[in-house]
Structures are given as C-alpha cells and as structure tokens.
Length: 253
Image (cartoon, rainbow, N blue to C red; front, side, top):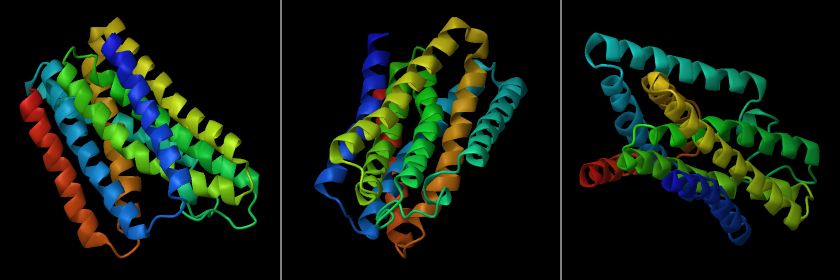
C-alpha cells in the first residue's frame, strides 16, 4: 500500500512539476512540445500494452477466455473516455483555446472549463495507475505510473499559459493546476482499492485501464504531436519512448 500511496503522489505530482515548469518556461516551441508529448505517448503505449493488456489476458485465464475479457475490457475503457469527450471535450476542442498561448484578453470562465476538462480526463489515467498495482506486480505498476507521469508533465506545462493569459492570478493558477493533479491521486487510490477488494474484476480492470490509455494516446496525444509540422521527430520520439519502457520492463521483470 505504501508503494501505491507514493505512486499516487508521484503521478499527481508530475502535473504539479509541469505547472512549475510552465511558470518558468511560459512559452515553448511547438516542436519541443510535440517531441516531449510524443515521447510520453510512446511510454504510455508500452505501459498500456505491457503493464495492462497482456496481464489482463493472463489474469483472465489465458486462451480464448482471457482474450475475450481483454478485448471487451479495452473497448469498454475506450468507450468510457469517449463518453467523457462527449460531455467535456478535451483541450482546445472545448472552447477553441490554444493550450499553448491561451486566449488574449481572455475569458477566465472558458479557460477554467478547459482546465476542468483536463481534470476530468485525468481521472481514468489515475485509475489506470492504481489498477496496475492490483496484480501485486510492483514492476508493472511502476511501468504504468512512469508512463502516465511523463505524460502529465507537458500537460501541466500546457495549462499555465492559458490561465495567466486570461488574467487569473499566478497563485490561483498554481492552486488550480495542483487540483488537476489531485484528481489523479484520487483515481490511483480508487483503481487500486477496486481491484484489490475483488480479484474477480482484476482482468477486467486491467483491460479497461488499458483501453482508456490507448484511447487517450490515439485520440489526443498522437494527433496533437502531428499537427505542427514535426511529424517525423514526433514519430521517432514515440518509438524511443516505447523502446525505453520495453527495456525497463525486461530489466524490472
């Protein structure tokens, strides 16, 4: 449980770290942002496959039964995040706000909705981190948590500029950013407790969490990193992130 608590704080703290960096580097180039986010996407992709989907098949009994649980669970996870998107669209889809530059002379209510969207989308990511520890395999849990934490850093950076541009005071901006990270802490603890209370839902929980991560990678991260002319660099950054986690999985395993 101690490892889970530390992981929860680490995952949520990554958003806070990103927010601090956002204050320091109020504007980074699209290319640099795309490379960082794409690397994080590769890390998350490896974490989803190696730490969630494959264990889901194994804990589901293997064979046709394990595969069925994994496939159904993945789609349930993806559909859940898709439903979140319908209710509260993510990032610039929400209001037309550019996550990097904000809205000049902006409207704080729109920017706060933008931040709320991020907070809501952080919940399934936190759950995924918690579920990863439900197997009792600390290496898998760490693998998933590292992937999510690396993704949270550029996201934490991205939410600072819009709020400052909208005239929100720096102190309040920092507190709001911290709140988005706190959502992931709650999600991590919820995911862990859910699968440890009932081992029967463990394979379903693993697949569900994997589906949420795969959806976020494909629907949000990859399109964002390929929208500013840095496609080649972003592609290699994703591959590098994936390979790094593959090496870590073998070494930790």
